View: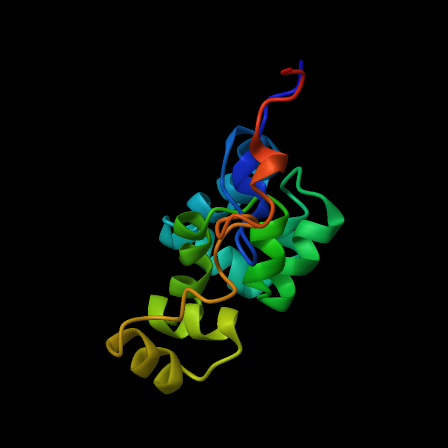
Length: 141
């Protein structure tokens, strides 16, 4: 019996659950390796060679090389681990988050100071009652 995951229908959101954790295990372990100065130096000296030491998928490696954090998250990366890549590059978390939204750091900061992004279009499908039936147990009646 498959585990029901009603949270998968939140637009623009990837939930880091057990499945994502398994998918991104090696990617996240790579990120954690960047906590050590010698590993950061090795990575910066030859990023591809360092990544090839990890049992990551090619798509995960390409995501890291491109610094495409959204892609890395979709491939099992956890933002708290991925932040180590940004720190290695000398970027703040705010700079990283801005890059993930397509905004400049200033635009992202201003949006957050103003209360964050609008909830419109960011609720789960059916939250307004239009598709609630899809979340109801089947077989009744």
